[in-house]
Amino acid sequence: MSENFINVDRDTPMLFPVDLREWLPENSLVHFVIDAVDTLDLKSFSINTRGSGSAQYPPSMMLTLLIYCYATGRFSSREIEQATYLDIAVRYICGGDKHPDHDTICSFRLKNRDAFKEAFVKVLMVASEIGNLKKVGGISVDGTKISANASKHSSVSYKRALKKIKQLELEIEQLTQKAEEADNTPLLDGLTIPDEISRRINRKKALEKARSVIEERYEEIYKEKQAEYEQKKNKRDKIREGGNKPRGREPKPPEDTPPDNMQFNFTDGDSRIMKAGNGNHYQQSYNGQAAVDTEGSMLILGKYVTAHVNDKLELEPCVDSVDPAVRSISDVSSDTGYYSGKAVLAVEQDGSGPTVYCAVEKHGHHRTVDDLEEKVDPPPPSKDATIKEKMAHRLKTKVGKERYKLRKQTVEPVFGIIKSVMGFRQFLLRGKDKVDLEWDLATLSYNFKRMHKLNDGRRLSSML
Image (cartoon, rainbow, N blue to C red; front, side, top):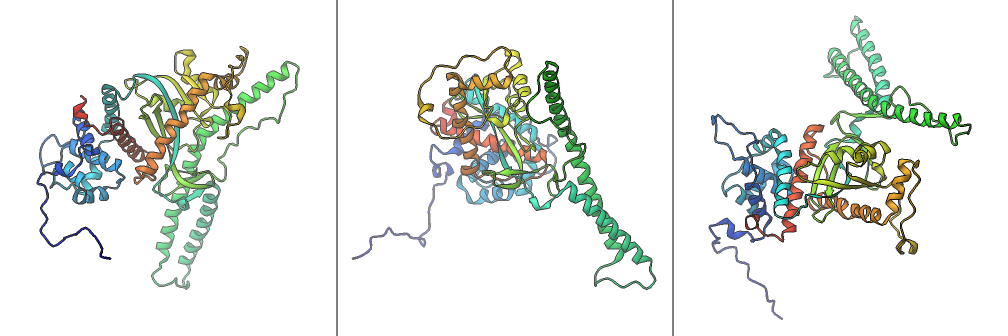
């Protein structure tokens, strides 16, 4: 039996279409990104207005290059530079024969932090114009841990730093004494006493700085814990004044000094060790926050990066990250990690702000037969009920269940796409400001990708 294979001939000269556009499908993401960027006002992007020096790449081309590469899973400037040679769509973005090097790409990215934030809002305005985004509606908020460009093994704890400082002080004293001895025993080849003393002094300064930073960070945590302690104490005092005995243990005031295990990372001092994945392991990370549309588009409407380990302080900032020009927020849904009575009151503003649907306790994913049955809304709580009790009742109502259900259907899939489809699982830059810039680009690129999907691959120029 003879094989029937297609003939693959690599010896005959290959003749390709002259126009790169003929190499790309009509519904390619690259066409949508180019059209969308062309609609943006890019005056805020950094350029050499004097016109001196070498010719510069236009901001529209550089922005399109970054967005398309991020959306297709290429984040490092070297990978993007390589794509300008190997990827047909990227070559089309760059005009076929233009190849910005990695230094140029990295420099453009770092110089235009504010411009990227502005572009994020402008793209959402375009989404509203073509009917992808409603002006009024709800949002769901959540956070995801993204690895920092640093190892957790480069961290030192508050207690360990003090122990190492004392050890270094002892070694410096020993080396100094050794240098003063007339017939001291020489060190190993290549080592000198002055260099060893200098090395230990520098290390000691770094550890002292680490303890100082930890103390500054704990000061903010201490104020919050002290306020919680005083609130609990005052509540128990009022119960006693009423002639009753408060239940449970007496609250303890927070410690004046940071806990021994509070850590600082020498590689990226702004990052933190956080629980990752299913919570069974820890990694050096940042906490990427996102506010996602719940009205059908699944576009990211607000975003930022925080170094807070949990989301307890993020409800109000996440709501505030949504530009009013993009969305007038009617309601907010979030999981139990965001709940605090203070945050709920701040967002709702005595009824003038959006309604919050925030879980006050964890619920399993399994639904019993009783959960499936339709029920009437439970009776409202009493007027003197706590904020937590009122929130628990709100989530048991039909409207509350429907709005909270949207959280899992919107924000969680968004993080899945960013991490698994786009492949954005680790920041490449270091420091809070630079990491925030990377998150801006990742979420901006996600929105382009999502808008392309919402419009079935049609070119934006055909819809405006």
